[in-house]
Each structure stands twice: as C-alpha cells, then as structure tokens.
Length: 401
Image (cartoon, rainbow, N blue to C red; front, side):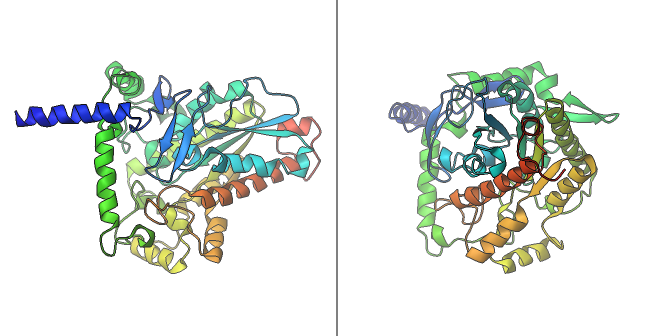
C-alpha cells in the first residue's frame, strides 16, 4: 500500500507539472538513419545548463525558417555537430553558428552576398550521425560550405561500437578500408523498435524526461550550492577527477585496440564527409572545438592537469585531426590555442554557466562569440583565396591559389 501510494503521488505530480508547463520539452524524435533528431516545431525553455528559450524550425533545426531552395546571391553554410553546435544553453542568436553568419557577412570577398546558416547540430551526435545528417538533411538545402564541428571530448567514443553505451545511434566499422554500417540500430529490429518507442511514443516515460525527478534534482542542486564553500560562483575544477563526459584518454595516443579502432573510424568518417562535400561542389572545413581544461584561463591549472595525466600538452586530438587534414587536403581549424590565449589574456571562462560548474560543460555566450568569430575569419580566408568552388565560379574576389 505504501509503494502504491508513493507511485500514485508521483504519477499525479508528473501529470500536474506537465499540465502546468513545467515538464522538460520533448525536443527530439526518432529518425531511422540517425536514431534521433530534433523535432520540427518543438520549443521550450532550457534552464538546466545556461538559460535559453529553444525553438526548432519546421525543417528540424535551430534557426529562422528557411526555404529549401537557395535564394539568389546567397551563400549557405551547413554546420554539422553535436550539443556544442545545437547549443541549447544560449539563445539562438548567441550560438556560434549565428555569430559566424553575422561576422562572415562582413567578409569583403562576399561582395554583398547574403549569408544563411544551417545549424544542424543535435545533442549527443557523433561523427557517424553527422555524416547521416549531411546525406539525409543538409544536401537538400544546397550548402556552399560544410563545417564539421568536432568535439574531441566525446566524439571519438561516440563513433565506437565497443566504447559507446548509447545504442540508438548508427555505427560504422572499417572493412578492407571501407566504411560499413554496423551496430544494433542497423542490425537489430528489436533495438530499432525500442529506439522508435523511446523517441516517438507520446505515451513514453523516460525518467530523464520526468518533471518530478527534474524538480527534485534541481532542488538538491540548489541546496548543495548554498552549503559552505560550495557557492556556485566560486567552484573550481576538481583536479583529481575528469570533467563529466570527457575521458582523459583523448589527450594521449590510443593504448588499446578499442581506442585505436575508434580513432581510425573517426578519421575515416571525417574523410568521407570531406569527399562527399567535394562531390557536391562544396568547400569543407573541419573545426576542433575546445574542452574546458584546454582553455582554462589560469595556465597553472592546465599545467597541473597535464602533470596528473603525464602528458606534455592537451592538444593530441586536435593535432591528429590537423594532420589528417594536411594528408587528405582539407582545411582544419584548431580553436584551442587562440581561445586559450583569449581566456588567459582576459581572465575569462569560456565554458560553464552560473548554474553549473565554472569552466566546465558547454560554451557560454562568450565562448560562442569568440569561437564563432574565429571560424568566420577562417572561412573568409578560404573564400578570399578561392577555396569555395561555388563562389570562385561566380567571381568572388580573387586571392592566393
């Protein structure tokens, strides 16, 4: 009877909170190719990390409504990525995609062309899902440039069928040098049915979506923030532990077969995105985003973290992708060094919010502004030097070959 009473109270509380509009919005829906994607027309507040109203347009991504057909004298840029790109933590006009669009519009080589940004980032995505997004969503909008935002913190793990625990996502493996679909989403009808029920059913109950559980958790967080020595504005990284969701192993060469395979698959996926971009006449830029510790404003904290890991620097994943770009002939922008320099010079954190740990998690508004500006500057260089085929063919300002 006690258990029945508790369960009844929870159900009544859940129904009441949802009717009052306090439930977490259902932003995602099932997708046969990617496992899940953003639900067209969804909207609501995200206040768990940052504080922003999030709305999804009818085409299924953040940003203003957009016609499928590209207007004349317009350059379109498709940005592929995960939660850093989707950026539910900040308002849409503060995301690095929006910053890129505004800054790039001032590029002299565009000669007054309009810039349209496609923010195709989705929370939790790995590179395999970003490749599927390119194939099944991006190309219908005829982008002139494809930007792949690589979050080294977890993208490599996301691409590994052995290291990743989320099964409602596509995986690929290398067979004789070719990427071949694998994993339960492709191979198991039961898994596909479970994923469909998880993301599609209007009657689903996912504890992670529970308004009651969320309210209890938020209350506990508020209590902890008021404990002595735990004020949220003064919390610092615990150097004895890693940032949640990021493995220390990304900062050094892979030491076991699972990690070596994860890196090989990740590199092959990036190469495939580059090949498909070129086949569609689009330019390609891979951007490595930052992990919180890479851009910590205090260099002493970074040095202490490196000593604990036994590494000389924190740039192994970025250098590896940069080397891949040089080998295969595509552009790579590594954001960690210039963003770390900015953070150190201005004594500003680029990750974290007042309701989360300082310096950890996703980019805050300043992080998006600095990162978006750097990406826009690199794209302007590419356009000016004739590296964007569509614009070079239409007579963009000439530059170095």
